[in-house]
Length: 460
Image (tube, rainbow, N blue to C red; front, top):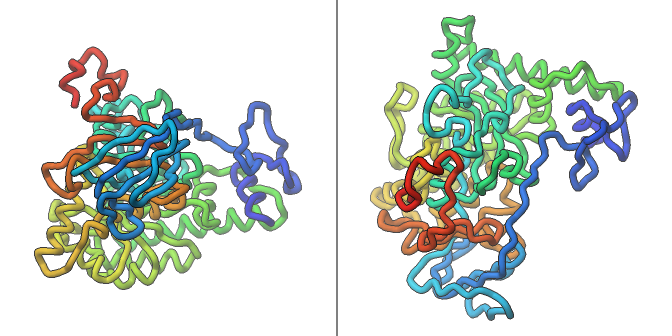
């Protein structure tokens, strides 16, 4: 059976082009994607209309090659049109002189909980962890995202143009994450990144043990691994039952998500600190035929850099968080640098509502730790850690994450070297539209929740 039919059966809906025997017909009001397949919880994101823009005379870090001094970036109709030197200004283009400034792709956070743990941080809106069962693969983070979270605006002011919002790490299978464009919207559908695959949040180690050790387990790391395998066995059987005669089994939201991983349509984002546990997770993935896209936090990733490179698994890490629990004890500041030395895929992520506002500085700390220890890290290297590499891990690197013709015009102008503590994001473009200009207060969006709480001039 073709994958399209498999996907339709798993979603419990019919496909117009070639329905499997026994598949249901489309229901009234059903929406379809560009490929004709029915879509549940579809993105309604639409890029803002904006005039063409030419940025000139900047130091440009493309995340796809060497820096360009006195470089230019031309944007039109939401896309990068040209990157280089001496680009002519077409008629009607807005020209921005960026002399003394730097231009980079928009910053992407591969691990965020904005919207699911919004501000203010009170129990009423603490919606990121469904701590009822070690396997809650059936839940979707987007169904908790509160678009009015004022932290989205603060992240945009730090250069964040896209982010993956994940469930928390209490469970072995935490549920689906969602990738969003960091744009103001009254609905999460209006933020959803069109065409971005879902991620499945999983977790190793202490968190599931702590939450479920006195509640029926798992209480040990061997219990954690048994829980993964049990879940994948059920998912594999569900997939086999659905494929065997073209008739879907009784619909199961948990197994739909896990089957989506086994089909290669959903990317595994696995919270895991220790090197030995990451290696065991890779063995589990081999047993069931799926791939881990990224290990998150991964404070001991430096111990298995060659293995991560060999398996093409990214490490989504902090610059210097360590020691706050035993499994984080062997974290070192040279983690990113040693991974770089091994040729592995490195991502600097936040997992924090404040850290997301300065991911450029977090990358700078990791770069400095390497250079101070004799491992040369260049600006061209470090910019990839917060742009194209997270885009790769969440499955959108073909659309954004680097300054290349044809990609989304997600662009940041910095008022200096982006890896300097003194530098701020000056202008932030998302799909070519200027959505934040530090010098223009009219672009400083305020969440409806913030209106009337703080004077506009003190919210930035």
